[in-house]
Length: 290
Image 1 (cartoon, rainbow, N blue to C red):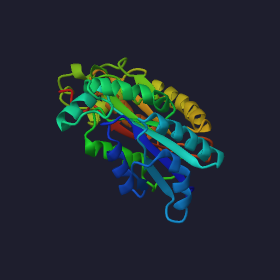
Image 2: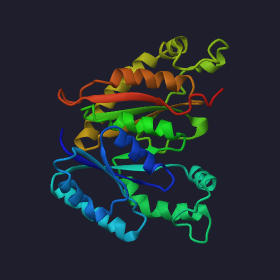
Image 3: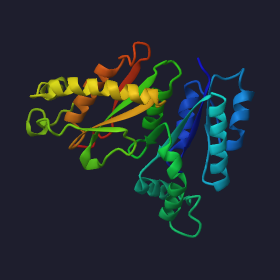
Image 4: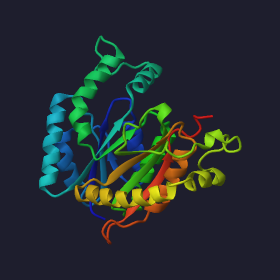
């Protein structure tokens, strides 16, 4: 296994520590609160003791931000594989988390919590845009976030491209970590069938109703072919993680069935005859729409 280093960063209160603990549970050597200037030194020091290294870095300070850019450039010059995970959450969610913990935001000073969040988001804007993976924890509890990270970073997989196929409901908002979004509201809605309404897209009869609807099979065939081209492009550009969001009105019937079908079709497919894709489905809003 080639050695690599993963930098875990993101918004305060979004779940950086939870991500770190999940990676540690799955075989990663994790270092918390590391000064960015020590990234290369730590990588060299652990050469014989760890294959996979993850470091949690708080880049709210301006000097830390400069040091991080410099250290990432040094890793690139050495040809060391590195990835950046940015853990994020919606502002209103972050506010509720700080209020429930009764702790101030680190950049709040004498202002409101939301002011501290605004300052931090502005400082991290550039880093977020260049992250390899953005993880949105807004709708996830601690256990769900740990499971998501475990699926993406478990050391027992050699997949070249990992695809998180996320079903969601538009009524609950777009996922902020989506790389691609597919709208499946063109499919007849099982909600209007009294027998199917209480069920969801994991149930066989609901899935059959969705997948056998007019033009859906052809649409999926074409979309999978399109995804293969997109996936190859992402892989050539060095992007190893993709979040494909599938949306319907409530995230209960159509998007769930389509996400499951896409995961089945894409998982195990090859990009160029040598590198393969690992895909799994996650259902963000399943259970919220009654």
